[in-house]
Image 1: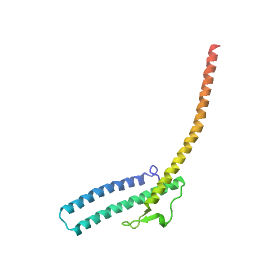
Image 2: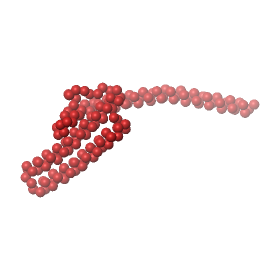
Image 3: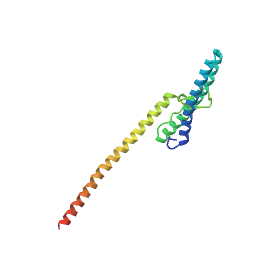
Image 4: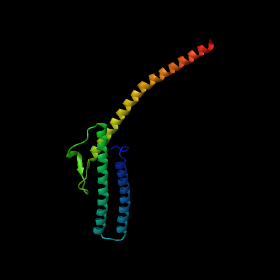
Length: 155
């Protein structure tokens, strides 16, 4: 379920992040309007709570999808996937959602970056060890062919 292998998850995350911006803009506008209208504190707090709840529900969905994506990526790379209730939080607004705790997500991202770096370095070293001698061999063969052709032209 890596980003490039599963565009559905990536698209869903993009949609959720876009919705976050929209919710923030709409919420701030509503809060500003109700504050400007001279409503009492109780009404203002009711609007703030309603807007915050929508925003928080969206944040929890983002955390859920990002957690699923990270866990799938870790599994694909052969890294240990976090298990156990102590590694997960449950949504406060969306009660059915479970997502990795923020610090566990950060550690998993770090582990994934490290694993990719190690794999990239391994391939780089392998290519360097194969291409350099192969390039030298090809240049040597071409030099011999040129020398042979020059000798043939002389005689």
